[in-house]
View 1: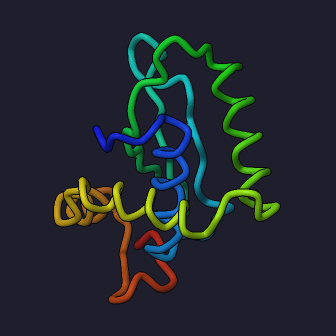
View 2: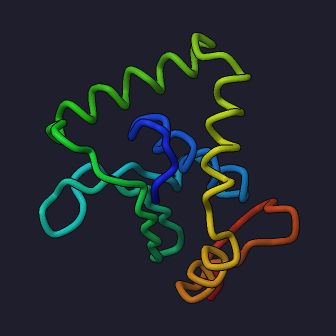
Length: 126
């Protein structure tokens, strides 16, 4: 997904997007070494034995370890309030404006995930 955001910011926006759909943070993972050549970043949702992989983008020249370190540092800065809410909201809005939401909902449904109206309490279905 091309958003014009850096890979770290796009990953955060993707993570936040799944949280806003109602998935608990403990069920959302960042996969920095996905894809056939290991340079793809995915946000993965895992619930009740099901997985959904969302392609965020390419990490370019960053190694998996370098990406992971930058990701941890950025997440710590966000959690410590060092990144403004305005910046986070702008990044999320930019990410959301590029997202094919109907396609995402269909893909999640095909994997057995249910998204209630309003995105509250997302869960895998039996």
